Length: 465
Image 1 (cartoon, rainbow, N blue to C red):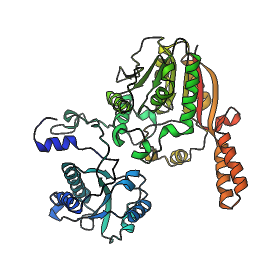
Image 2: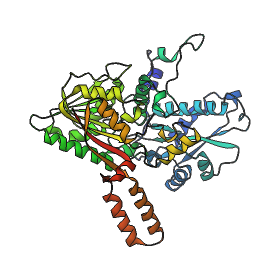
Image 3: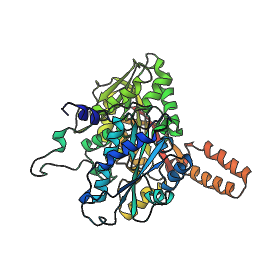
Image 4: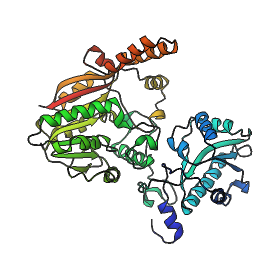
């Protein structure tokens, strides 16, 4: 983008704020920010928006609960501005003018907040807008179209990746415009460049910070038992190869969580740690994230060398250990990626690969398969995914030159049964058996028994033959 002046600086500098310092926004300042919405155009100049400023903590908690808005910044923002629009005159308009009018007003508010030094974020991910309407006693003709969280920000997120104008602008028609993403989770419909673009844009939606829970409902992945298993096993692999210190490659690192944990826990034992992914934007995200912590001298980012296929920019037989944390799930055929992993591994080199299990009761997926509804839905933040059968996965490993040294199941189906039993016991007031079932649930997280085939995730330790 080119241009000069205060306006262009404003739109370039605006960021979504997700961490607030708790200071109240003065009433006069809030009203000045909202006045920007009154300058926005609306269909037929009807100006049918209405805004409700929520500042009372108890009311904010009620709105959050009834709307099922799970982002933590909904609670933390000093002001939550609920956006309503009277849709009764325009509800059947094919151009959806109520939404367009409200959207223009919301963007005006975001720009005005930036101009006034106030952090803001539009929160459209409300699962039940009717809950906002109910909590605020909205009349039937007003429909909630999201909220804007306002307050003084503590974060300074870097600019996310923006599409260049030449990518989004055509003249006199849509010739050559292709679908960017699919609404379908089946990987065979996705080309590699679509998957790369999806991962690149998704990564920036919640900014750059260490505590993922602060920024979004999703818990910090590094706290999960699956992640702890992964980093623990990799740590043991690294220690076994301490002379000389091993070179480690993390496949499709995304937000860098796994690489970060390895650097924090095992950097002295590392020769080098590479994070490999598909776009330069992902590399910039990880660098921005890491620089707030430490200057990791033994880490580097590798960008995919070919937009049409997986191509790791490393020499043959240059890596000792490869980690792959549920990444082959995003491909219909993981053979190209496995071949590249095999190519860069030294003879006798090993890899730890986690794969989603096909026979675990992933009820949401089976329901959609039965209904032939493969829309992303709850997978909006994951993209395409495939559940693999254990035999099929092992065939892929063998056909690309790997030997399976060890296979185990993580979160087998009995954990779900123990969890259901524990919940039932506690509901009935049977706390002693409930505690016993809870202990059993934690003890059965990892298994090599037959139930490994009925596990949420299959863990494979494989060796380059």
